[in-house]
Image 1 (tube, each protein chain N blue to C red):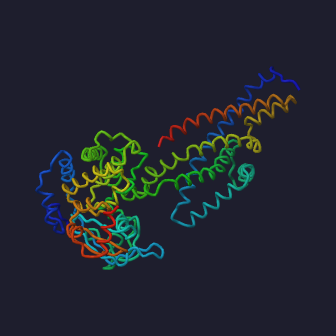
Image 2: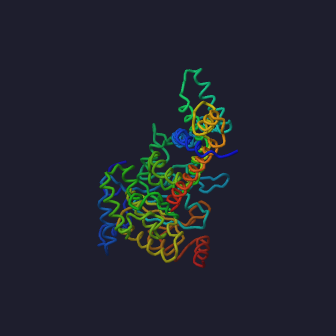
Image 3: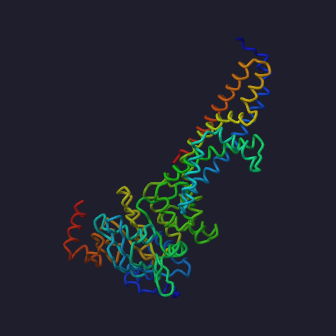
Amino acid sequence: MNWDWNYTGRLIPDLLDGLRVTVTATLFGYLIALALGLVWALLRRSPSRVVGQTVRWVTEFVRSTPLLVQLFFIFYVLPAWGVTLGPLTAGIVGLGLHYSTYTAEVYRAGIEDVPRGQWEAATALNLPRRRVWFGVVLPQAVRRVVPTLGNYLIAMFKDTPFLLGITVTELLGKAFDQGAHTLKYLEPITVAGLFFIVVSILSSLALRRLEKRYATD
Amino acid sequence: MPPTDLTSPADPMPEGAAGDAVDDVPEGATAKSAAKAAAAQAPTRVPCGIKFEKVVKRFGDNVVLDHLDFTVGAGDRVTLIGPSGSGKTTILRLLMTLERPDGGVIRVGDDPLWHMERGGKLVKAGERHLHEMRKRIGMVFQQFNLFPNMNVLRNLTEGPVHVLGLGKDEAVERARGLLDMVGLADKENAHPTQLSGGQQQRVAIARALAMEPTVLLLDEVTSALDPELVVGVQDLLRDIARSTDVTMLCVTHEMGFARDISDRVLMFDQGRIVEEGSPEAIFEEPREERTREFLRAVLAS
């Protein structure tokens, strides 16, 4: 099998298109995961036992079922109940929801890591509940878990090929289509893999810088 | 609670403390600005005494406070001494609402701390009542507990802005006045982690005072400090005791400090008051064997 450089060159624009879809899905999915995970983490500490336990089991359930099953559910089953999402939107929601159950655990650990003295000082200063969370506890909790949260960004990025299952032509989808067209799979699949590696490495470097910035305390 | 202004406290202050607060010309800039901070306090601020009525606190099977009764007059400086585990810190934590009592009534000023009066009866109070009551009380912790995600200035303005509803400028002005008083005017932009233990504790004292409490709780505030930093913090607290009318309740193992800051000392053992009296009486002529034993042990170490 010989590597065809001309063919490779012709592939690049199309694969970059796919990469754009992959990155879009990752970033929006990640935003959902960050926000929703925080909501889960806070609800789990709700004074109401019913709320806390419900959230606990729902997140446990989502975490324990495969991402692909959830994507199929959102894209193929929800329309039966009148909720129809486009493939990319369904993919973003699916990724975000799935990973929110992981970030929820990360936030939870971070919150538990905030020393009791911080809560007590907040009580002694009589700070209202909102300020305790958003002024004192969460800034410290999040700072502690920035590295772990960052790892989930990369994990999620590498999970985006699952979106192929719901007809999103992201990076790997484009590569596969090209290969199917010319019956030459070596170049497109290899280049797609390289793209994944390059983005992963760049993100890791960026995250490490972020970690350093936040690890000053 | 009847409205009372600063010059006519609900409970008469002990002679010494009243004289100090009114007559003494403060020496040095520190004491002067402390006096200014005290004078700037709102007229609604009423000095509060403390009253424990048959207070019970258990941790599991361990009864820490067993129907404890004691009273602290408004403006009094009272020190609690005694072996560890005798319930001293628990008293402060109950007052700061960090622990919930299992029985009895605690009053701060005339109002019950953990209860509300409804139809002549005392019922368990909700968070709103606790929030109102906490405005009267401030606490300084052994481990400082400054907020590491905020600089020094924000540590001091956070409460006044979000709890007392002060404007930003007013809160900053108050904070700067207090930082000046604790001798850290140049550190307002520093982060707590950049300060020494002694500096952190002085910021923590300023933070508590920024809320203008009428009762100040000091929980072993010098125990976590290196020996050479202890004196600075103690001097500061002495200045505050001299120049304000705040009611002070202090738990400490530093007998020398207890002696010159307080006008009354309570010796605790196993959740009960074994002996109480003026510092001179307790430290020079303790009546109870338990007190003598404890003082011997402390002085030996």
